[in-house]
View 1 (cartoon, helix red, strand yellow):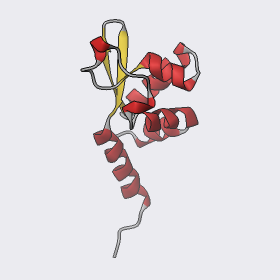
View 2 (tube, rainbow, N blue to C red; view 1 turned 30 degrees about the vertical axis):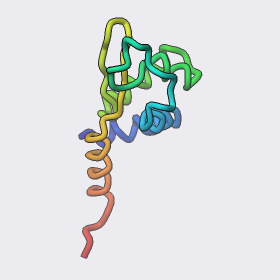
View 3 (tube, rainbow, N blue to C red; view 1 turned 60 degrees about the vertical axis):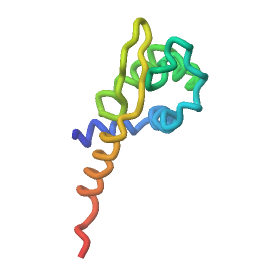
View 4 (cartoon, one colour; view 1 turned 180 degrees about the vertical axis):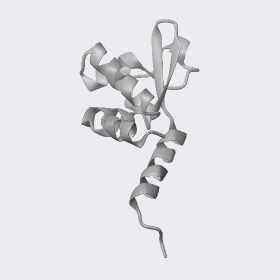
Length: 104
């Protein structure tokens, strides 16, 4: 766990907003019939909701992926992103361990 990289990834309100949106698939339009069985959200839906350019959203998702907050899965020309709950919890535990005093 690279805490510095993770904190840097969260140091952007839009990236934090994307993580929040990804908590609930219903924040995005329904998946196409051929993608209904896939986990995650197509990057095009994230881009549409964020109202940012494709390159900016792709950059943001790459930062979140490098930090371990999301997983990417490629299907044809589409990339689908979903939260990595295990790594998110590991980050929170690492920050807690680093910042909180041992309880007595």
